[in-house]
Image (tube, rainbow over all chains, first blue to last red):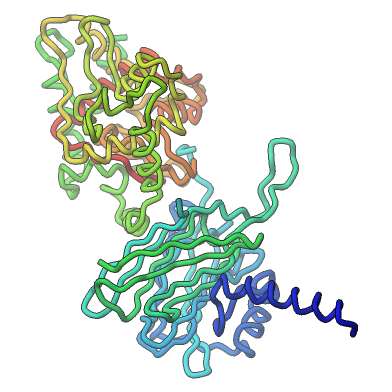
Length: 150
Length: 101
Length: 277
């Protein structure tokens, strides 16, 4: 490679390094198309965790309404007493079920609350990654299309 | 002015954090009045740092509601600095800092 | 009109005599009693929280949203707008004080002008008096500014007055009352049908809220709108839902209706802005 090309390559790399440094995500799972733009939750889990075998567990606490007041803003909460390194949440009937993946570093409590969009009545599942295994809790959330409330 | 609003309060050696981020979170499914699609535009990554390390991080799909809300809790105390940053699919970023109350 | 109202009130079991001796004070007492009887498990002050005072599961979701409510963004925007200077150097603070904590003063009967003045009207009249263009009435800046003012007024008692020395004030109250009880639209509903007679019932997938407490929490961030809106925005929306032509925001009809509906909540406290479905 001649000198000009090497310098050009070096310039490109340092710009990229600057972009990475500006947004800190050194070790943690970041957004990836393969995991999130995926209609199959099994494939999303494979992408995130290298496997998709899950076990339902009473230790995974999932809070979501039985009937959502408004499908655009559904408050959900996932927590566990297990030592978790990641918590994920998926909405089965959404075109791409995986909604969020959170990293729980050492010293952080295994609890996440957020607000999610659901297009229609659906099963939702909380997924906790702990000691190399995946544990889940599911429930159904009914989503209605308003009424005379307009 | 930052799009990120943070409430951080100590509770016996833990810091309870609630944050609301102003962002339309366009799913790419909505249409303009003329029928053209509004392109997808949403926060893909959020990171929270305190004391020089990452205390929480999350990746979002377009199915997270408009003006995303997150609540989490990490080991910390009153007076600690907490910084929350986000990045969206267009590469735009924002961040905000606060002191734990 | 009086016959229709008497009939409706009769149906509602209110048994009010629509004679000169029964007046607004008696109306309000009967109104409140009706809801206390209909929803005996709801503490009186809780009616300020609309449908969440009668639906436990919806209340849980509302409380989750209240952890960090979307209207906080409107309050912040409103604070900036409230204090930003007009071209002449003044601001809304010159009309309404340093924090705009004046929610409890509206709506009121203006004897000089012979009309009901709402807080939104007062805000825009302040702007116009200072050479500024008025805001729209239903959403956007008017809702942000009144969100800020309402937030600073939280806890103020609802005590709408009908001055006894101006018969036009009582007439405006009676017009608002008539609006409340008169059927309209293709679906032929009165406010009283959904929010009084069948309050708490399901209309397809929506439960109607009690009208007692209706006017305390405005402006509101409605999930449905994904934005803030004023009371008159909601009045118009309701009319459209029952397929009636809506009246103009801040026109006499909705202003008098607001006068009546707020009077019916006398004794409660203003608790806006609020998040609703």
